Length: 310
Image (cartoon, rainbow, N blue to C red):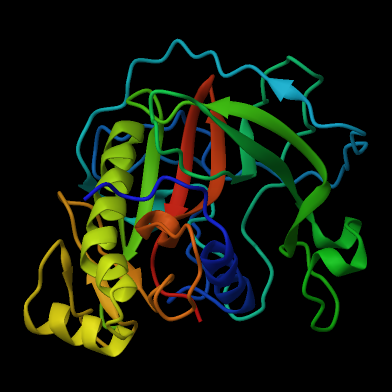
């Protein structure tokens, strides 16, 4: 059975709404800021002391700028490798419980059109392609101190501290991002409330293979039965009783199903898009959301998350 290849629509918006309204299974899945070049050659990524946060604000651009993605770094090694999230100098999940981002150095100013991004940490958003031989257009925005952003850019629960960080949505640029072996990737999944989030490092080729697999498996295990009239409770009960296509029961009550594939962290399905909500053009990979982009020495690392949100 061919998997669906249309863009994500209503179901992705629902997932984003769930995430934005709540939190990951840890209050903040963020580590100390690192300026060392991103690498996935060991289970822990090296870090150095965080640089002093700048309070300067870049002048908002009037139009998105296209930037270069040229890199001379060798491809990241293939295969998912478990890592300690505390060693990653970038956000790994959305902020918890209506709080703001924190422990992030504000992003550098966005570049002029055609110029590369400066070393730093940025917010990134894009949709996974169905053809990974082609680059995707990703939107890159700046992290900035809440005290300098418009009042609706952050959660104000009694004033902002020097650690309260928001996203400068009025400032953005686009990059052409190739999801292949040259891209370093951090993926967060869910191994239960007892153990918390499960993080691993890999590369874009690993991520592309995972996205393709979960799209195909979700189509066969969930969307096809749903289209035939089977209700979501029955679909879940069947997969829990007889795990198949990578789906099984989550280790606790954090969601309906857990998906495991090829050594990647378990992807948590807290509900079944396309079956419970009737949304069209749904993909299993809708549960994997981009979080941040780390630029260091001309190389890119992206962090992605498919764990618990409430």
